Image (cartoon, helix red, strand yellow):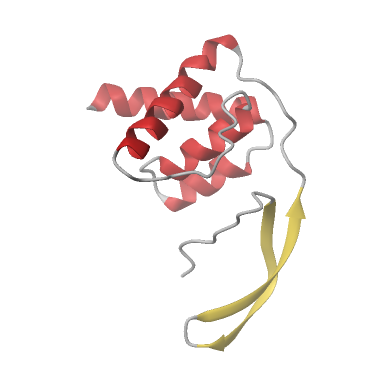
Length: 122
C-alpha cells in the first residue's frame, strides 16, 4: 500500500495505467499531470481557515518542525485547502476525495466544515 509520495514541485498528478513491482518495496506506475488550481484568494468568510493554518505552521515551526517549505501561499485558497488536507486526521480515502475536488474554494469550504466539526467534538 502506498502511503506517501513527496512531490517538491507541488504539481498535481493522477496515478493510473497499471503498475509494475520491480522488487519488494518498489513499484513503478504510470501517471498523468493534473492542471493546477486557479489562483483564487480565500473569500472573506474563509480567511479564518487561512489564519488557522498560519497559526498551525508557526506553532509547529516554534517546536523545530518545518511542515511546509516556503513560500507559504496563505492568500491562495487551493494551497491553503491542500495543506489542511495533508494535516487533517481523516481517513486516506476521505483525503483523496477532498483533494480531487477541482474547485479550490469548495475544497476550502469542506476543510472549514471538517475543522468546525472536529473543534466541536473536542
